Image (spheres, rainbow, N blue to C red):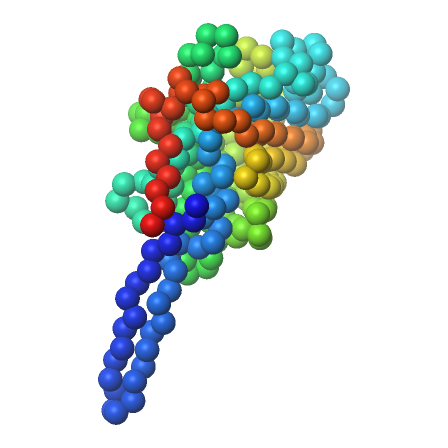
Amino acid sequence: MIRHYHILTLATMIGGGVSVALAQETTPKEMSNVENISGCFDVTYRFIEDGVHDMFSKQHKQELNTPSREWISFKEKEGEKNTFILQHVTFSREEKEPQSHFHEIWKYHPNTGSWTQEVRSQAYGSEKTELRYQCTASWNMNQWQCHSTNEAGKPFRDNGAPFGFKRTDYDHLNRNNSILVTPNGWVQSEQNKKISASGAVAAYELGWITYQRLEDGFCETAIKPYPREIATK
């Protein structure tokens, strides 16, 4: 449910006239989109590039139609208004042992109506966390599209992941992300350019990540260490 915070109406008497500053919402209606990114999900990753570096395909351990289980917690960042932390936690359905994956920080800018998504490695609060990429754009209804102009480092799938590759033919990504959110889940699509150190395009990549919402009970082992703190006001 969307959280609303209001400032008091200010009436100022000037020269016998009355100037009234209307009450304003400082947390926008798009807040529900960010909240709906959190929860328990079956997640399927698909990345298509050149037929050799495609993820995930039959030559890899994980089939295209075999989802992973993921819990995404939610909380407001202490001391920073309109800033929210979403921790991604993955775990095996058999072992049910949660493992920190990465975290996002979403910040709303009331002066422009835009949101910054900052994606960082490791768990929130870890000393080893590193910025993976960030981008600022506005939500249009339930869709957020953003072209990151800053250089994004190589993702884990291309930087030594046991299920991926150790790529040396490119240095960083030029990312174009789109997120579409509904109460039943969300989809992230990516259009990536893989850029070499010299600035040449080494490859183009399309990504499609689906988050199918489950009842929270399917992620119960991750909820206690990583609670979801959504409050309604």
